[in-house]
Length: 574
Image 1 (cartoon, rainbow, N blue to C red):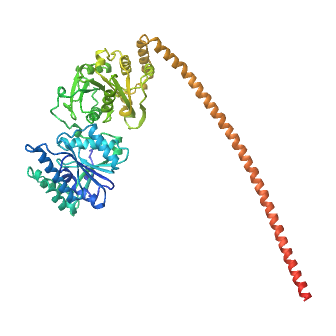
Image 2 (image 1 turned 30 degrees about the vertical axis):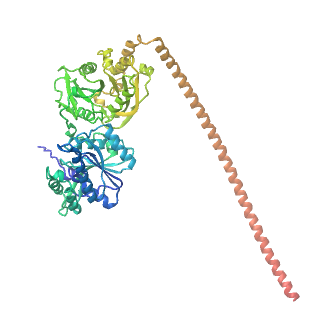
Image 3 (image 1 turned 90 degrees about the vertical axis):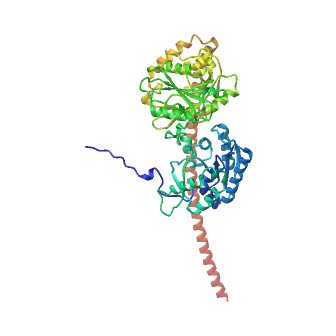
């Protein structure tokens, strides 16, 4: 009987060797509260300082959340404790003074961190792990990851642990600096009165030597990743259920204006749906609800009530739903001021919603905005092309160039009667955009902020069925041609007329290019022939120079004979 066994090595999960340093260059340490910079990574700070690396330490929040007395005095005390610890370790901390428990994962914080990274030319950033239990820790870690993803310079991010152990890929030996770390931790008397954090951190650092040689007495754990990895895969930090970090207590009714409903039509592809939801959970825009439309019916996987920090609802009829009907059910149940679709095999980049909302707020007369979308092969991840064309209403009449999850639109368009045509199951989004275009201009955001993944076996790419595509286009044209104005028809005719002219012009230019190439070839032949003639002339000159040299030698010999004769005559005369 055949028996399978799973073979693995422990060092696939945790390092069995310690490093002396995580890197070099300009270093930025970001701590959510006064003391986290010491509890989490004092050892690595000392290593960088001793190596001469420029170290910038930023304390993001004021740490004043739990104080019930004089909050200003308490905040100042915590600052002084951080300054005292910094003096011991060799740096002076900077304070951003964001209120404790108000460190928000969003565009403002990401931009501020990114500005420091770019301005200071940072090479290595330290931040709390995204799996930390404190919401300020989580938010700061996620903001640093997103700022690094957007960085034009390749940088490294090292996530550290404070409140909960992380899954490390680096263990830093801090045996020789542990005593100094203990002294620095002792500076935070205000916190040690509440809990013996220094004892817990010392125990954690000791525990981290579990897989290391006996001579390593203390170690700090880190998960290190670079900006290129984050750019290639924004979900690289969220492969486990860590992306399900919830922030209970929010209710749609309590959210501020401009709530965005993300409508996901799902046919139960569990792994792909999980990735799509994770990409929504990472949105930097804060006011989002997620509405999953169960288009599969029975057997759809159960979902939690939260998608990251955003509330999640599921709607359906209990039966399989065609694409257009599922879309309309989503529109009917959406609560947001703005709506956007995301199919369960596609992805948003973290700044997708933020850019679209910003564009709509800057253009209050428009009710729809769209950005660029990268088309990739789902099975390999290879880039195929990019949808990122400027808005052209005439071109939209001829074909759809805007993927469904590229556009965010205002719910008031539903009041104007815009709905998905349930007679269509291909190009239903194109028909919907044509409806919307009757009521508003589309704002184009010239950035690629989403990904459209093609899976042949899922039939995502309608172009694979040319007959179905042809019939669907005919359906669209039959529906819309009576609604087009004479002006629109004239423009379409003009466009059709100009295209052959353009082809003819391009052909003429290609002919001219070919003629120029032929002329260049002729010139090259002439040059080659002249070079041969020159070579022959050079050979003749060389031969003549040899003859001259021989004549000169003869003359020289005769002159020597004459000199000898003159010498003989002279001797005879003498």
